Image 1 (cartoon, helix red, strand yellow):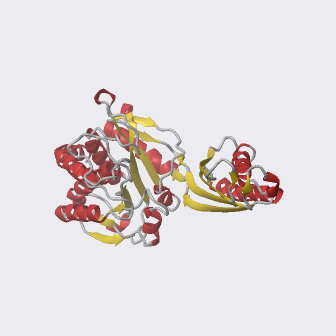
Image 2: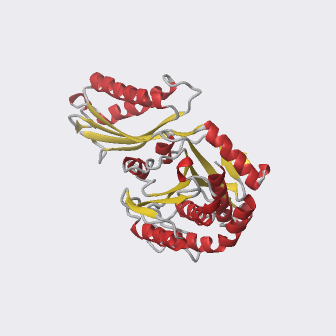
Image 3: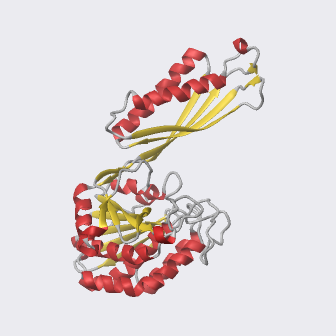
Length: 391
């Protein structure tokens, strides 16, 4: 099986590099992936793979049934949306949609899973169980396409015994894969704060409540939520990233707005911190006389890589590529909506090396110069197909 998959991955790689370039040059924003979804459906039709479309708007669920379809189900997931970034690369497959770019590698994720789908379909008579493939919209935008896919039954009928996903990793050389067991990526919540009071003349602060000062106190004091309350062995980050208020040198504004993000690796601590943030704001409001409104938008949960599933996936990856090509990867405070799946089904989310220092392919994700070493497509589609067959 392994050698057959390697042969197919190698044979199909040129065609799927072309597929990746087509997807890359025609990016679409979250929940607007209509042409991307249509293109994926065209590929599935050409493979002869049955599917259901219109999940979470533009999402697709495909099924490959082997022998004894009810014996087990393994799910594969790819995200299909792009980012509002203007591409700076001078390549033949540069984005034709101005201000939109596949700067996070979702074009690669989609291509890899499409490639694995074609391979698995060709081998279906030799497979045991069912392979469920999710092409998911809206990873980059709240509330996350994964949460909507789940609400619309993506993890039912049949329910997966395990789900696998991958993400490009530009700081890892092409040819390598990275795995991490247990807590892997952080939850991500958005914080919106509005501070209101009677504004006034800067020379008469005693006749106002200084919203700039109150906002400054709040920014500083919120850091105590992390440093004095969280277990230091459990990573957590609170960053206020926007401070908007005032318009001139001599007027204390009546309103200041703050925006920020809160990240955590522990779901219990995550929601305890929300309470502490609100209490901190209430205390400052009472002490200063200002009105403070806080809205915490609950985002993606912690991404948890099931230890058993991840250990098996790593062992299989070592068998497919060689032990020297598989590495440990570090915890990340970034967030991924694959986390929603990982909270329900035993999951493994791993990294696909796409960098090439010799060729200057080193730009990070979410940058206008991001690109990949396309040799990673053959590796990704072959590995994903092999893992799906061996679970």
